[in-house]
Length: 510
Ligand code: NAP
Image (cartoon, rainbow, N blue to C red; front, top):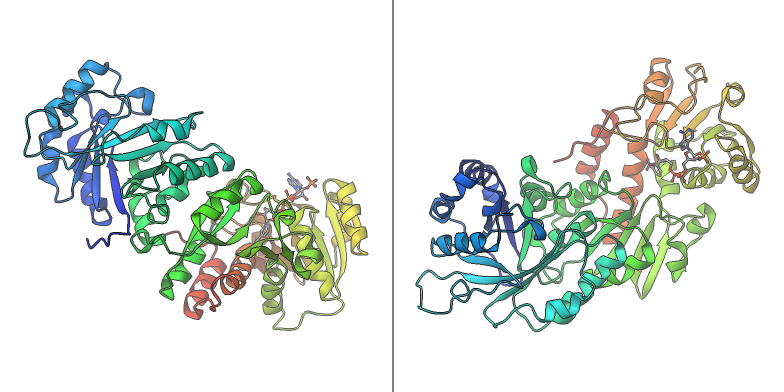
């Protein structure tokens, strides 16, 4: 595979317990990879004897690794045995050998009698559970000769730790033309996609069938959805911050649009516990725009240098754009209204009698949207005080989310679920207002979504109601964000495809 100097190589980790298992992984995923890492420690004892055959069974260059348990590997038979195993395998045609920072074995490092097939040394620092206190010092001491490639593979547990990792690697490795930087765990997922952006020679992928890595670190997803091989040090980066984030469909929606337009840009999910602590990492990663999801839509507001009237009206920001500081807007408001207008064939009935279930961040955006079209709203929430507080801000009525609230909802034109009940696949049988008997003339709009239609929408549709899925809102707000981020319209054909998939119950992941 052509690999310009500023692109990273996609490394497929071979972690099967058998050589045959690894060959099957290679057959299934090798086409996405540029290099493989044979994790000899993952092979069973008998299989380790055959490990030296691997380089001759693949056209891809191979890294020899025998990772010990303390570094997150499976080798626990002592250092003497491990070095003995490395010695037996090192001349078998591997292009690289991964040796830890504290390993002293001059013969493995290429010293002594010259060997024609001596692999290059990757000198690695591992922390499978966190980040060492003295990360900078440890990185500085890492590569002993200019020919060695320093590698850091540690586990950021927070946004602050991700920022620390990127800062230390950038500072210490700045003069090294070749280095490997890997953040393990979900908070470090971005380092896999953005290997080229952060100057890492390799981005690591694991085959999904045996992967213990975060969702989406499989070679096909990295290569196709994130277009790993197109990312360069200058590629503009967009993404979504949230906690949790692995379920987010936004990377799928945005990356499909970027790819369809052939734009040099990538969209990455960031697991963020604290938005302020993530900002140094965002700057180092060259992040130009962010979608913001639960629970950060309010927390990011103090970080904004500028915010527009939509953020003010909704009291929440779901879109950030970086130029000279961050500016914030909100596409949830229009994203909510757009499918509603479509359902009402362009004209929302006036006055619209609406019932909003929930009084959290999403309900606030829904209130701003409904009030902008002159709707009369009843807010029902489990916590009645929150219902009262939100309703009074918008001159609306309020009540409890129970049987008495349901009685007051009868006869409404529009019922909107903005609670988290029914969200995701676990909750698809739960309903926020099971006591409500639909007459068939209501429009029922459920912000919650999963991979199937929610129970509330199923029941409403069966009663003859017009229904709108939360996926429609997700798509509508994402298409608006896409225009804000790229200055381009989301490709109409792809847009239609996604809308049809959403109406059929769910978006299919690649
Ligand atoms: P939030 O601020 O945490 O508010 C959660 C709301 O759900 C509160 O009103 C809460 O009531 C209620 N709730 C939670 N568990 C409940 C239960 N077991 N029974 C009854 N009510 C319950 O969250 P949010 O940001 O508003 O998001 C709400 C939902 O909207 C989420 O599922 C989110 O994914 C979805 N959403 C979808 C889109 C989209 O594009 N489709 C956009 C934004 C949000 P209490 O106040 O009583 O706790």
